[in-house]
Image (tube, rainbow, N blue to C red; front, side, top):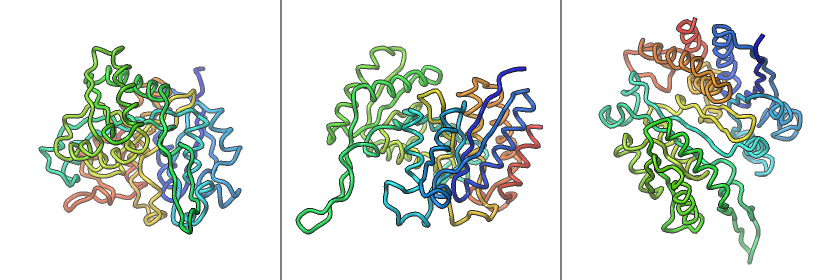
Length: 358
């Protein structure tokens, strides 16, 4: 009997509670097809954990993650918890997991399914054939830098967030980007704001130094404002985009719309012994519980889990192929639907993908 892979499952909030169970159906089907032993365990994080335990990342949930082979996460947050202090909001669970699991690199593939070219707001000739990997530094930068907070000074409030990067933080994410590029088209575009920010000046210099170890990979630099424009103007110029925590957060969501919907993009957060897989979209409380959520990003995240954590590329390919076939047959969830196509819900879309797998 082969290895049993232990997976911590955190559905989270909103549509996370709908899409994760559907992704698990696909996970189990592929595992059965390929004789892969899987063991899953659920726990609460985010708003649901706040409601139950008064904190976004309970110790038991963190320990479950630390003692697993991988983590599958849905989404966290929602208007219900927006009035809480930042230190205990649902999003702190994500930041806490990234920090404790040492997940310094976020891989966000932006690849257009040809059947969805018309779902994008851009012309087909602009987006057809795009295949971009956004690599976002995940545990440094302005989301973690100190000092931070809101303080009162001279009768008014002042909000403070600090952008901080060290040499070692930049070196490790740069190496990850160059290694990933070696398995693709060998082109890295490092995105920063070095003309204004000292932290970006250091970023650019360190990335250039690391590049000396990867002469087979082409390196270019681009300011973040130009990159945001170039993603819309000519996205096919990009292979691997390497960037900071905040810039990656923004640019990857922009890039998602090239594919037709943010509901189509998976992600992998890697670095430590336990990687985390999640769709890049949020909890979408406005459609939660209505069977409208697109499960494909979460299902594709399961595919990335097979590839990056379990080194089972074949299982990943099975999922990608099944999704492609369903889309080619014209089935769409509301976020990617247009007239003349077959409207489906969350569960039916998963059923269709399972039919292709089985």
